[in-house]
Image: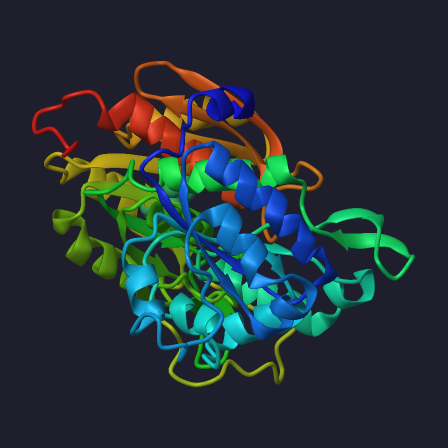
Length: 415
Ligand code: C5P
């Protein structure tokens, strides 16, 4: 794709903002800038004070053909942090220092780059570069997690020799990786625009008494990744989530619930105004009919019996109520994955089902990765090996887009 992209000026008409921060890898930003210009993009460069210690603004000014902004108050343009943010198709920060990651994660705004980031609506891609010890420091890891949860694409630095002489993970991503991330962001940005997507995520908790509940191992990672992917591709999201330790992605309407019944209520309320339902939650199939009013005591008991009743199947219920919505379910299975998934696809009247084997090593509950097969009601099948849940989220959205959204079914969903 990159070779084609180069020769066809694929970024013509696109305006990118390149933020350069104070890492020794700042000199590599020159190569990135040249490649972006070769592909036809207009590039505005912002430099932090640290970056200007490594490279002169003049270098970037000559290569970009535009004034380089280094200071919020330089007097050449009023409020560059607002004007640049408004018409950018993507912001790239390369290299990004640990200091920059911390400021961006916390929303500090003490220079033009960090202030602008609080104003942007477009995709933001960050390519960190630092010493290996710094990249693996818990604070840096936490800041990267916060940024990713907000939809920022943080590229993992590469392993290799660093300025310190050590060999570790910390080198700025290769130019091709950075450019590919830009292409993905710029061209995928809009393909879900106009869609309002209802996503369920996480487990439910069904109370036994005031202190105990029945639940499952779902972390919410798959559903949150889907919510993030829809936002990154221009769609609106209502995320209905059971208890999860994750931070909901930014610019997503989030509804927190505990029980299957609360999840059913929240989803029923939002379903009529949505165009797509993606039901990634691991809803309890059974619950105690009524929670005990006081804590169940163990005194004098050698065993206890708990009666359970079936919960409503939310997905089947909403699927039966749909007007023109696309409905996508999940099938977390431990055996005969495909045949159980097909039964659910048909039984619940779904358009697509994402089947995964939760016993597979490296995937399933709590893991950052997943392997899955996506089946459609029309018999198509897409098989995906173990990959990060965020990437699988994009594949699920591709499948919905290709198999459902582009085909007229009653009322067209495509703008
Ligand atoms: O039948 P099973 O629970 O395995 O089906 C899984 C799919 O059904 C998932 O998409 C899950 O979110 C959904 N589900 C539901 N209501 C339930 C149980 C599961 O919507 N009570």
